Length: 156
Image (cartoon, rainbow, N blue to C red; front, top):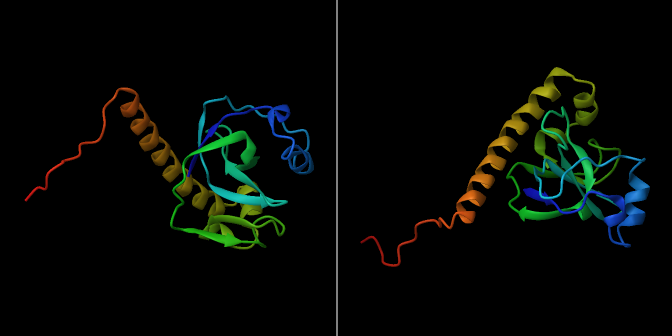
């Protein structure tokens, strides 16, 4: 799943999303640029609003939740290994995340830099980098007007 940043200020969120944002963010600055693409590592649901787990900066060591109101989905494909979880990951916040992340305290272990969690995260980060690269390559081809080859007649 890949999203594109379309808003990067609290004030730009819709009136419906502002209370949800204010209830779930403690003065967090948003440093994303409009037009920037992000791989979604998972989705958490806070007060029934989706929040995307993304890396705001590619050097980050863990994904952080950002309100879906800041983004537009540009690739809605969901990885096969995502599972629903409502307990271990984030204090009872329902989420859809990689299966290995559903283990108790995974996110806390990742934040603490524990080897197992860091290794699993970096495996996902490698996949994310490949997916973003493939997506951007496709976008560049679209911009240049290069479309995939389709045959109008059968091969046989």
